[in-house]
Image 1 (cartoon, one colour):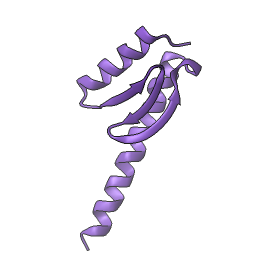
Image 2 (cartoon, helix red, strand yellow):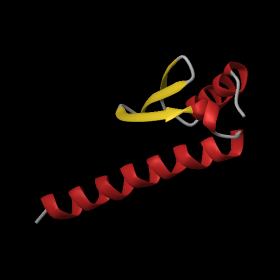
Image 3 (spheres, helix red, strand yellow):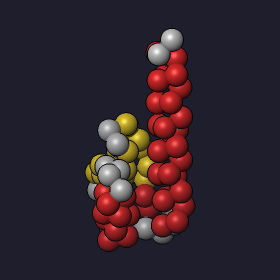
Image 4 (cartoon, one colour):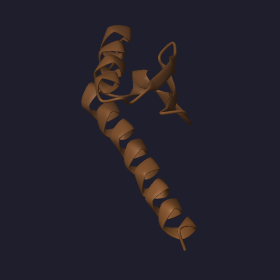
Amino acid sequence: MLNAQKLQAIVDTFAKYNVEIQTDGMRITAVNGQPADFDATTFMQDQLIEMICKVLANQLIHEVWVNEHTKK
């Protein structure tokens, strides 16, 4: 399970890739400005990284879809 030090390492690493993760204690409350609600204490480190990547993938899919449908 994650502790505060491991969560901060994840946040800092994603920041190197221009991904902003907002936290409130051990909860992730936003990923790149989009609301999220993950209790980091319930994840192992690799699981949380994969969950954040899924959130990013969904954001990209949505953005591509919006861009395709607004350029017509």
